[in-house]
Amino acid sequence: MIAPSATLSISAKAQAMQRQGIEVISFSAGEPDFDTPSFIKEEAKRAIDAGFTKYTPTPGIAELREAICEKLKRENGLSYSPQEVIVSCGAKHALYNAIMTLCNPGDEVLLPVPFWVTYLEQIRLAGGEAVFVPCEKDTFAPDIDALERAITPKTKLLILNNPSNPTGVVLQEETLAQIARIVEAKDLYVISDEIYEHLVYEVPFPRSIATFPGMKERTVIINGVSKTFSMTGWRIGYAAGPKEIIEGMTRLQDHMTSNPTSIAQKAALSALRSPASVIQEMVTVFNARRKLILAHLADIPDVSFPIPQGAFYVFADFSKYCQGRFEGEPIGNSVRLAELLLEKAHIALVPGSAFGMEGYLRFSYATSEKAIELGMERLKNFLKHVE
Image (tube, rainbow, N blue to C red; front, side, top):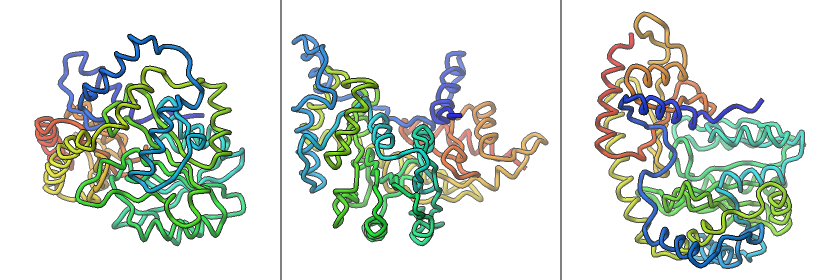
């Protein structure tokens, strides 16, 4: 049975409460709260006025795939041809295409914990078996020794998310180099989800694992415009990888959705060819919010967390509170703690169990500083009543 997305479920409950007139502070959303830049919206309007409203080639229009190749060369130092790129209906769709193409029933997929909720369900949809790889306690990077031990003759691929959702951790080059050596030696594939690559703070631009020796031909990069350009609803993601894998993904997409929306493709083309300053303004705001929420969390007794260097999440250990009691009743786990916080404190958070780690809560700081201040005040007041 495929589980619903815990992130979307929490957001839906929070929205239902808001429709009832209850003021809910949401730390659950996985999308920037900024509007899509106006020049991108104008490009979409021009596409409509020009009648660009018909089917396009399944893997996307040639100009957009060329712009993606330019981006990968400029920012990641990777050379791809348009035939090695597919545009899909969001990065989640590109990810699903890749997993379905690479993973046969019974194949094992290495999944570092904690993981984004959708990875596990898409592995299951493909008939694969997820093999969980624990993280290092302090850094939340994959445990390299555990990763190597987890490999069996049935292992087909590894999924990486860098920067990470839910932790915000950015993998260091040495960690990536160690992973690359293992992957090449064991003849595995990697799906590298790099959707948050531009949202990094006080660290260098993340290096793609595809840039390491021998890795380009065994890596499928997943990316898109949703997070970088605040275009979540436009549903444009893409994948770049070996030609035969991209061809397989295209055949699959042929019979699932055909092409991504024509108008959104034109908007994405405008986004990818825009100046870097468009992104930097949003990153600066996110960094200020990051510092604010970290300062508040550091004030809460018995709570620990890795310092997030990317994305817009904090993954904090609330195990002590999960083991406590509220109004005389045991809390028990992170799901119940998240439910109580929504019901009693009117703040929405995603429980750590959704990401494979019990006792944690994920905070999204893709919201205003005013909302962060109010939400953290409510959190602290609630926790005072946990025994």
